Image 1 (cartoon, helix red, strand yellow):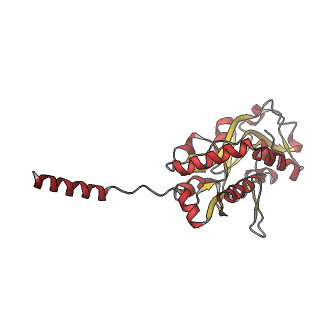
Image 2 (cartoon, one colour):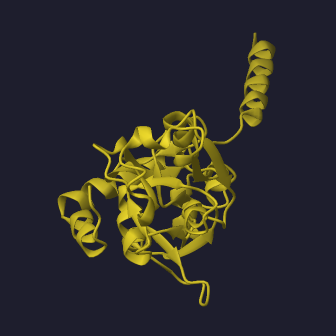
Image 3 (cartoon, one colour):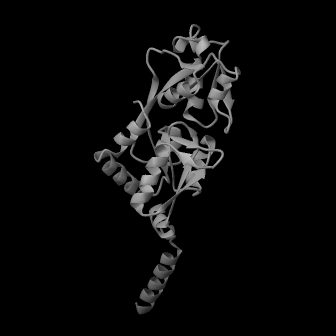
Length: 259
């Protein structure tokens, strides 16, 4: 009997040794290293904008992440990424989280999301001189119309969904869809109402199509490692607290975000 217990204990000890340890949460890694790594594209006005001359970032997202790092008591490091690799940067550990990203089932298959803190909707833009031709969504869904989108964005899927009869021109970052319209290589592109309002100020030759209503109202949130519930819980707690204290409302006013 004693021998049996001894053997059983030994087997149990060996089994415990073979059980993999739980992966450390990103939260502990951030606190230990003193650095919060955030993936950001730098090409979404007014959320994240990179100055090519200085490589410095500014925008709504940049302010959000700077505030989060401040409350964590760490430094923030912005890691350049693009839309097609946004999710893989999180899943591979290249960065601890991303800035704002549209919530989508496709992304949620691989990455986790924080609580949403803002929402946007999709609108089409064309050259102002073509507004007589384009007055609503149906005017863009024609075989002789070229609609542009940026690879890896939510809009890439939306152009195929909204305009099945149009020609789709998908461009790869750092190129942007609106540049195709400005250059005359596309008739239109679609983007969030947030970016659209900034684009028509920066490029007066562009105009938002006066559609009856925007499409695809979508919440946005931060992408996080899917299995890291400790880190997700922390970020969600932080968002809830900042929301109650008016942080996101004030930031929305600063960057003229329109819901």
